[in-house]
Image (tube, rainbow, N blue to C red; front, side, top):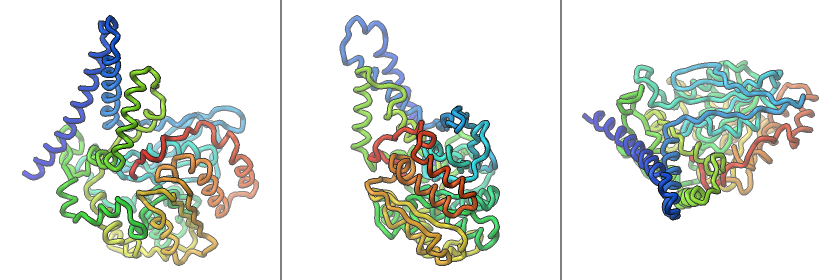
Length: 447
């Protein structure tokens, strides 16, 4: 009976979303009727604008965004189309490769580990675009839990870690792993597993960006919430069963729409102001489909369900029990010893204004890597940068990306001439063209 009520609640949420989308479409169609041109009252323009923004916003919540990677400018002066190709396909996530047509593979092989925290891997679109001129880029593309049948089994943080181990092993020892936010501690654990069980498959370097390796190192609203709530309360409040209309009907999930509500609540005033401004711009005729608002919110509003076991095990084991921070993490019944990492270069990146993974949480990884020589460790604190900015904003593009690529080069086996070539072009158009600044960091995506 409880499961049936959860399904009803899930479908009720989808019904509310669908109703608001319909209301927006109705208002837009009604106020745009040509008959109102006989009485050009600004009220009709406002109603039409409100309807257009509302319809678009609620429609985006159930659509996985396309990658839409622009062509990459080559040294030959030609634009090279980028194809997204699956390399490994698994029930809960794929390893995908961004193949640049008519270009020799780049010697820098980068695996971007995307967070599974409510948004799709396309959240890293601008990160991918910025790396493609210099690297062969691979990304972990996680699937929406509501589309995965119950017959495929569970997926918790141990399964996530096993996926990373398999992906890194498949790509080979010259891989440079960059983990963004939530997966940082699990990428560290996956590297430790390879260091002990299959040293020849270890990545060349591991870069951790704004991740909660030690959540207790610096308190934030996110860590405070996790500590205030008991696991029973969390499960009762946020976990639901997928509704009847999806392939994953009956699967326990933390719904994307519920996650989105919490994201918006963190900065409600900022989001309200952004949408009010957008409505008035639509009414004035000064808005466009490709403006900053649409580029940001098309991604921000596109949310995916997270398996209940992944969400609950992350809160309990990473945030509450501090298993990674205290080097007590267990996978498949065996304790993972982060101290076993000895040959992998480790770098951490933090934003001084990050209020999701505050400074101190990520750099804690360096102290855990007791077997890594100091010469193979690096850390960077970006002044003035928030959470989103350290992997996708201006801070990433102008300051952090060059540092990460230099760190990769320093610990790679590629010829020195290749390294010098990238350094000469680092600030040139070939590396930076076509990358636009995102909307201000104040509209954060909580990953």
